[in-house]
Image 1 (tube, helix red, strand yellow):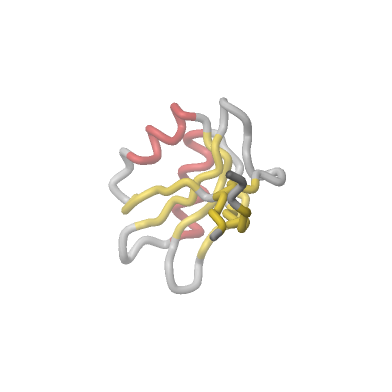
Image 2: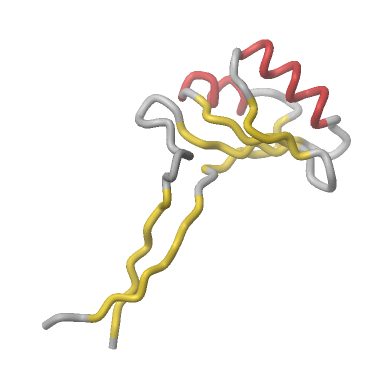
Length: 94
């Protein structure tokens, strides 16, 4: 029987120790395009993608202090680490 190895694929997503790829989702009724523009100007980051259909939010590489500021915004529902993950099957060697 084999085991699985979980690997986070950085492939340009990770910003090193100083910045992490985050997805930020807004509360219902928030205009994602407008609010992302406001936050990007206020906290000086560049969004990688803005979600405007269905769910509203954005993804960006955020420094820890910027992430903390964004999390305190009343318009923000939640944030989560945003990276691709793969599972590799491995053979047990005993």
